[in-house]
Length: 207
Image (cartoon, rainbow, N blue to C red; front, side):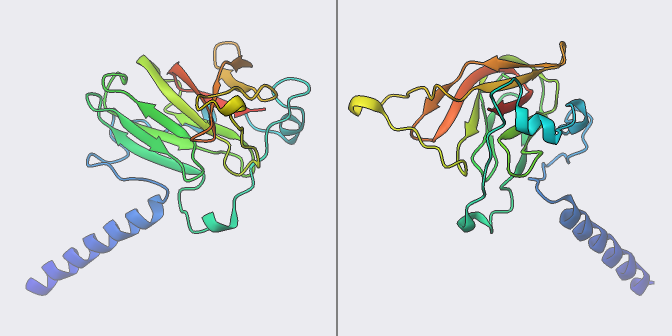
């Protein structure tokens, strides 16, 4: 009888280990990734990324910026995706190894939520934030890192404040119109990233 219990214990433990291994690219929450109030980012809610789109960009003359993963980051497992269980009353940060992510203030989320940040197309500055669509209660910071792009802005005239990189635009996907629109952003020389505040999750592109 005892050996039978041991068998089921071993089987249960094996299944749990298998689950952890196969989930990959995640920070398991205490309530689990499939909690009813924490839908994972749904990449299917965004339009497909075609070669023509990457070449031509969201609008003519603005091809999608390319990203090359530095050799010293090959061991970083979450280079192109990250997720984290976020409590509404606490907020927090979710960042990929590439450096793109979001900083969420307490009470910004409508409820406890599983936040996902994904670079859906390897080698390009496209970042999907999920769940999508998600309307926030207050504005949060979105960080679009330039790590791996070969671009780094330099403050002019010894200024320590942020400067704008004029040739680059941030575009976001407007789910209501089905179009990509320019979103104003500011360059942060410390993080080497384009940053902006928003009250909704979307797909954001540097082009």
